[in-house]
Amino acid sequence: MKPDNRQNATEEALKTMGILDALEPLEVRLQFRVRLMERIERESLTGRLNHAGSGALINYRFAFIVLLIIVNVSSALVVFFNTTERSAPLFSDLRTTISDDYSSPTFAYYEQPAAYSHNTETMEPRTP
Amino acid sequence: MQLTMEDAEHTAMAIGAATAPLQHSAMTTREELFRTLVGEHQEMVINTCYRFVFNRQDAEDIAQDVFVEVFRSLDRFREESKLSTWIYRIAVTKSLDHLRRLKRKKRFTSLKRIIGAEDPTLNLPTSARDNPEETMLEGERTAVLQNALNSLPDNQKTAYLLSKQDGHTNQEIADIMETSVSAVESLVHRAKKNLQEKLQAFYARN
Image (cartoon, rainbow over all chains, first blue to last red):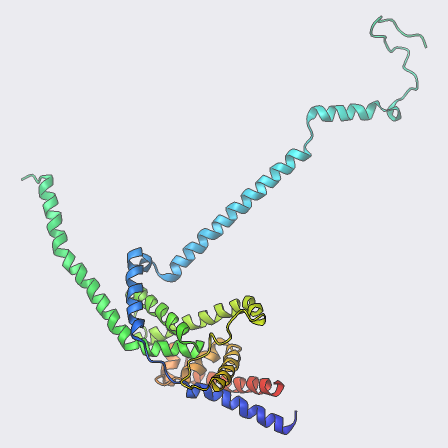
């Protein structure tokens, strides 16, 4: 940084800091106290002044957190039950599926039906 | 002698009539005390807040919040410190809270400022000058100062701003900040040094 630039920067910095020293104090406007007493009266009527400010805020925050937890848990339960219903097959479907699987030629032990297999109409043993 | 319901009612009403003026009187006394407090401290409170926020409207709003809090908590004031110290401590806390809220808000409104949707002169301090150009330059310089102050740690900022305000001795600042006089002096010294460095760096870049 050039010396001139640094000196300028210092001067500007000091000038800026001088604003605080030159800041004129504010005069209090008449409406300030009127507005304040109106607000005190209003809040006294609504009962807000009965609670310490931070205490009431903590109560509201706590209530909000509890509400959020309830909503989240409920949503999770709804999603869980919906998922369980879709993924759990009916027993009859399960039985059909299994019987279909095991009736395929892959699982057949014999190419021809066994000799002792019965004709259900005549009830006579089949000849091989 | 048996008391009838009517007798009981009359007795209750009599008690109520006797105590109502006392209750009213207690409330009136509290309100009167509060009005006295406001009268004595409103100027200092508003100007303390003004040092932090550089905006009259905001300073008045914060001062309102301060006095509402004082009214709420007056019964719980334990006289561990002077009443004025307690009031100014609330003023400092509320002012710092306001600045934190503004900082959070700034992240979202910076875009508005870029696109010109926000009036840049909205938060400039009032100036008695009629020259708009000077007012604008002064406003820019004030904004630079405000940014630099807000980048300081809270304790340095508080000590420095209170030290710049007439009416607060180092002992009073120490009482408000619940620290020692030597700690206040150290904080003011560090704040001044940091502020100057930040402003120098800013003006060297710009």
